[in-house]
Amino acid sequence: MALSDLFLCPQAVKRNSFGPLGDFQDGFHEWLDDGSYSRSSLCHKVNVISKFSRFLDNQAIHSVKQITRKDLSFFLEGQRPEDKWSTHQFVRYLETLGLEMLSKPPDSSNSIISHYKQWLDEDQNLYPSSYELREGYLIRFLEERNISLTKSWIVRLTGHKVECLFLEYSEGKNQAARRSMQATLRSFLRFCYLAGLHKQDLSFRVPGIHVYRLSNLPKAISECDAVKLIKCIDPSTAIGVRDLAIINLLFYYGLRGGQVQHLAFEDIDWRNFRITIKPLKQGKLVVFPLLPEVGNALLKYVKEVRPTSGFSEIFLGTKAPYKPLSGARHIYQIISHWAKKADLSLPSMGCGIFRHGFATRMLELNYPLKHIADSLGHRCIETTSIYTKVDVNQLKDVAIELPQGGLNHE
Image (cartoon, rainbow, N blue to C red; front, top):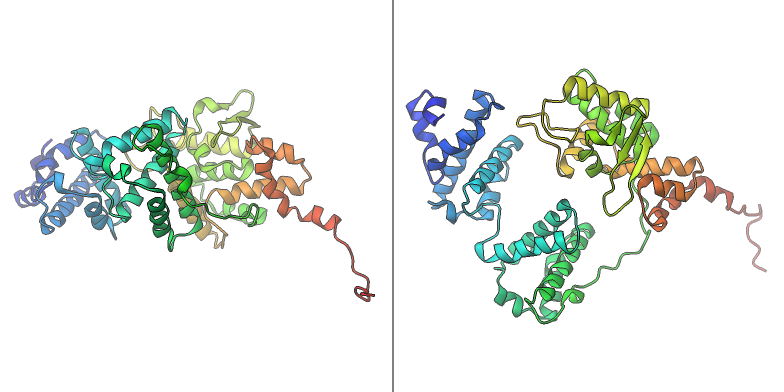
């Protein structure tokens, strides 16, 4: 179906065919038109790309090959979420045509970064989400420093230059961003050495970030607030049914967001009332009893709400095309939405507050640390030791009462 079939007005067809992206609009429309979208949705998506095309034309960009990531980011700034999604769909459409991609670094970088990702996957055995995170941080580092990643640039690197670049990047960044970039640069420089791109292993020249172990208390949602949030979820809507099933998994089992997103039908043994949680971050597989609150919420979602799909993952998005949830932002938005409805002021909107709350409750019920570690899927019990800092009951047992007259300094 061509644009002339979608838009009845000739002026609308002409408007949407304007600019450097105009020649791709017919193909983009056909690529989208798989029956998942209404006519109005298709019109809106094409209009968004037309807007992007006019923006590029105003920037004197007349070819797809001239578009950079900065151009894309500049256009997306301030756009509505649905418009951003439509633009990213168009980028993926261009990728199917084998064209130079908006979302990827220049050609000189593609080969090196591609081999780096392959090394992370095959040699380091990282999960796709992990090496995609490394790729994103590396690209961000190169762009912020205006670096064109070439073999000659890598050869010219020195230990002093690595230190300076990292310190320049770290200025004004929070601890999490610095640590993520530190890990990315260390792994990339290690790859460069092993791949023969540099004669020295410069990974150790990335400055360390001094962090005191167990220096901060884990942020946890209280049981009272968790129950209040769950009760606030509206089970009469499709979104409410799905979100209730997700929040129940977080609350009753302390799962990570990725474990919820990757939960598949094969992981639930309805007959024997068991649920298997696959490990993330090199953890251990955990099998929980399928609690009635969790099982009933899952069953209602699967039977009454979940869109028909060939995906094995249980939880899907609520807008066509229906795909599994991906990335931390989906769960974050779910928690944030219902916390706002419940008028709760939470320490964080991430899944970690439920995971930490789960561990804290087990500790307060005097479960052994080894049992808590097994329930969280930790391979090393030291990972679980952070929760000992919030065991107020045990701390009370070792508290010493001061004499009424105070301390005697004789």
